[in-house]
Amino acid sequence: DKLGLEPGWLHAAAAGGGQFFGGVLLLIGLATRLAAAQLVVIMTVAIWTSHRSAFFAQNNGMEFPLVLLVVSASLVFTGGGALSI
Image (cartoon, rainbow, N blue to C red; front, side, top):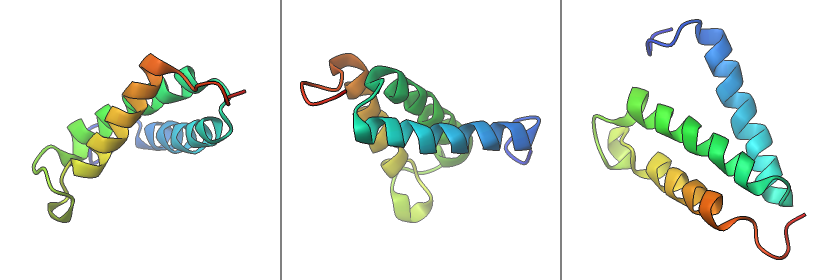
């Protein structure tokens, strides 16, 4: 609620579930593009709402979420590869 996303519990549950299940799907290589796309959306919202005041991570900046966003975006475009399910 403090970030301006109403209702807060619903957005927190959706983001937490998306991060957990998206990470599991990426780990096993199942629905890679779909899982990576949802992580792109989650990281974009995280950067916009919480981390846009600074760049470096020690200042609560966007450095690490931006890396996760770029890696997820590259998986959206390239897919999981030959070893994915």
